[in-house]
Image (cartoon, rainbow, N blue to C red):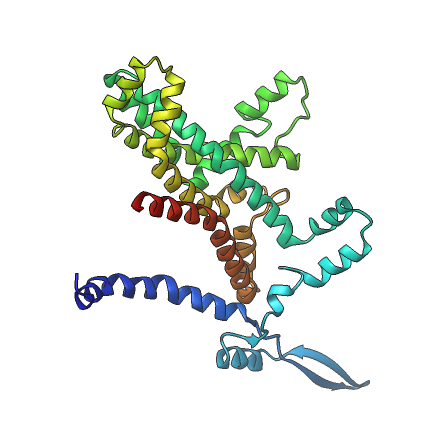
Length: 342
């Protein structure tokens, strides 16, 4: 295809990518370098029968005029990134200098809001993603082995967790694990502990969120793997059976290699999705025990004092985190592609 024709062919896609992807990201980066203007204060002298007093008040008119004149706020450079609410470079240096062991240093780091949220975000991502892959493949193999007349109904019920809105799904599970809910009451009965509560313990809260993440995302992996199973060559499977391969060996050496492109695809999607975990934390009201980077952004933007600069800085760090997570998968995919072309 001539270069001129190729250029006009991809121009609409490039324009859409610039307008809807590149431009918003650049806007967020610029916003992250600014902080909101402080309120303009004025000293007012009030005099009465017993003398004059000076008091400091907020000049609402001047504050509004300043914020309208410079809507981005005051330029702060990288100050927001290195502040205590984000990378906290000064706090990290002080903790390193004062700590006698790595455990003590880690304990101090976990008291910093950004690193506390990052720890849960990474744990959620690296625990939920592989479990979603394994469970999705297991469900797909199971459904694929059912009689044809049962598959439609089974697929429908298997997809229900994905169909339910994430916030509603998390609320349903939240009520189920309550002390009066079916799961919470059953666990209290099994362990003979009426005080047992999944919501009271940070560890149990994390586990509950992980379970919800797997429950909600596994149907997506299942339906993709199930579609891929329909393309596995029957001749190859029959040849493996003739050679005496067991069911597990056929899955290990025939099915999984055939589905590897789908494994990469689901992994990429799940890494991006899980690194932005947010709805379960709100639905479970788990912010006291578990916060994520997305929840920090939400916290900065709600309430009367919205911190756009702080939210933008966290957004940029989240984008960088997703890019770092995806890089090894993309490099491996690129190498496999080049090896097949060679």
